[in-house]
Length: 148
Image: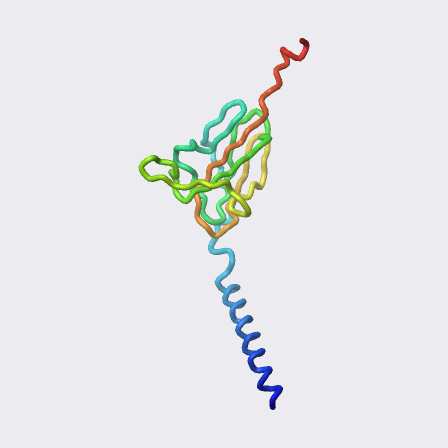
């Protein structure tokens, strides 16, 4: 009987852990994320060497949980550098209501693909953000000076 009394708290703890894990499973870790087809975005600012999905001081793209964007960048080749920034407001740097910006990290903005035509990013979290993507290609080498 003495050993039975000791095992009861262990059984209760084990049962509690199982119930907690079950509740997490029922609640789900996907939190209603979209995880669907990419939204094709043709906007942004593009030059020969740089693409920006939106202006730094402009309105950023809404980036809710699971959202996937396929950004058409119009660069002459695949970018050699892609940076992703997140904010909690669509206009994080307006002077009358300053906000905060951070470089994306972890799974908050996964860069899924970079091609000669597109950059694909996905919010793999359960958080709601606004996103700005900046991509650069190396400037073309000046071939006129190559023979000197």
